[in-house]
Length: 131
Image (tube, rainbow, N blue to C red; front, top):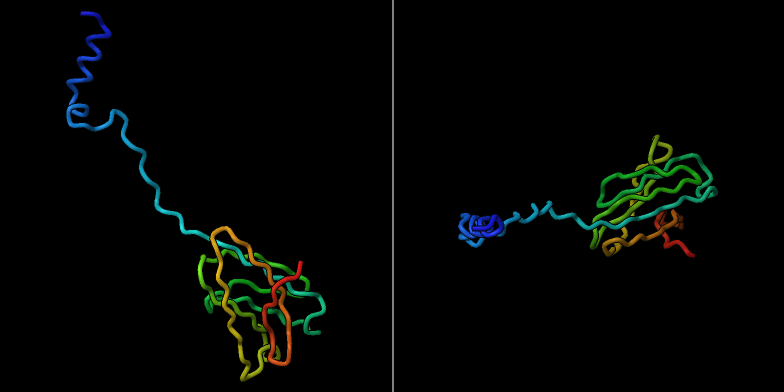
């Protein structure tokens, strides 16, 4: 019997081939990746002529602090998320009765949504950044 015939005969008689299993095991599947999106928020230098920092909140959790002229980008889950901004720091910066306005955004996987901190008579909010 030739050596190559012996190899084929050994492979055919191996338990993995007889059981129908592949010769090479399949790769181990990694844990599924959670899809992410990004929210980029900038704070203009001249917004609210004071030195109070502004907190960025995602799903009511503090994720970043914006000082005048600063920009941050945070990773967020895809789907419907709640965003808000509010002054942080001393009592001077966070007056009693301050109403924080939640805003909703629906983000797709890989999307980056850009906002700018703005203010009106109701307080701070996130305005879509104009390109």
